[in-house]
Amino acid sequence: MTKRRPLLSKITQLWLVNYVFLFIATSQFSFSFGFFERFIEWFGMAILGLEKVEKIHRTGSGDTLYDYVVIICCVIFSLIIAMAVSAIKRRKDNFDELYQFTIVIVRYFVAYTMVVYGFAKVFEGQFASPGYFRLEQKVGDMSPMGLVWTFMGVSRSYTVVSGLLELTGGVLLFWRRTKTLGALFSMIVMLNVAFLNFFYDVPVKIFSSHIIFLCLFILSYDLKPLIDFFVFHRPTRLPYALYRPQKRWKLVTTRVIKYAFICGSIVLSCVQMWYTLKKERVPHEGAYLIDTFVLDGDSILQHRPETDTLGWSKILISSNHHFNYLDNAGNRKYLQMKTDTLTKTISLYRNGKHAGGLVYSFQQDSATFTGRFEGRDIYIKSLRKQKNDYSLINRGFHWINDYPPNW
Image (cartoon, rainbow, N blue to C red; front, side, top):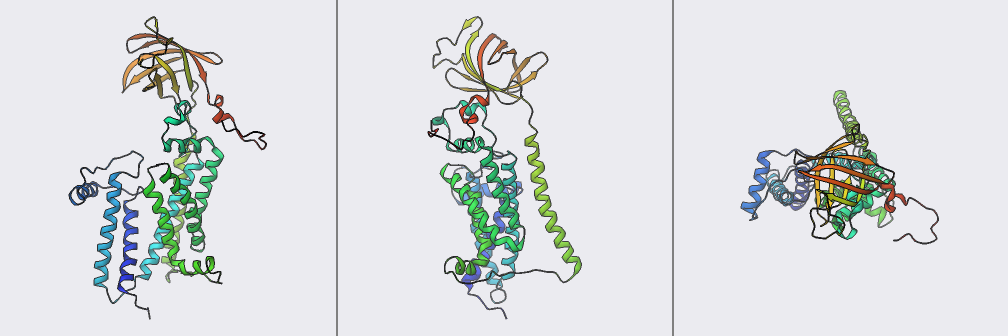
């Protein structure tokens, strides 16, 4: 006979279960529907009294005002549902089976998350090598998040190891026998990630902290034996709840779903990240430090006035489609480009409209650009820097350092 539990304990248990399901359903990996977005926006403005709440799509941020309103809604509605269900079934259920089922769902959700982010690091999808704008940027002008992305991207080995650690935690969570080890392992790995997000203002604070919370949720079923082992040093044994359907077709179905999910998660992550390895070769990539800039026959760059927005100081090319330059005032300008390597010409576009064309000529360490830009004749002579010319990139690893290379 199942022992009855106090009502408050039931409500708390149901509250956690409801919140977990609501969070997973509204997290960054879920689909967002129009009516749901409109409800969150209405709730934030009408109930919480916020001036404006709006779903901002594709910003890369998971810490928008909209996201915080979603969390508040999840907390409130999960509590309301828990109280209602507890009142209806006050004398019937302890909801232990529901709790164990929720742990299974959470296991696979966290495992999928760890696998996705792990492969993103292994295949250079999350932390790419810093581009030329970042390499030319002053450290003092970087954002804290930009600094994190730079130091992670500089060390390919460190990023791969970080990804492998996340993959390990995710894979361990796929199996019931290793779920406790997987939850502990994933939680430790994600603590470091969450600290970076909080202390360097990376806008994934909500999601990373919730992954830690979900790891704790998985461990909650093993809480007593874990405390006995780690705190009191008592001999103990982890509970092992084995669900084995009696009918063969149910057993086969559950196993097919399980392994399809595991294989699908891994294959999907690999396919997505594989495309990041298929990078186009950029024969003219580099940072071009302009030595001479002539506009309509007049040399602009010789005196380098800091308020000059006509003269260019640098050209930065990191892909076959983007042409960026910095004017003498330090403003960064974004252009699109198309390159013809046969005629050695670059066609430039601003906001989709043709802005000009340049003929380029490369020497060993220099380059010249000649042509017309926005209706004016232009001539540029520059020194070319490639990534291996930067100490941040070419320093490499040394077993022996007589002096700390802390410059």
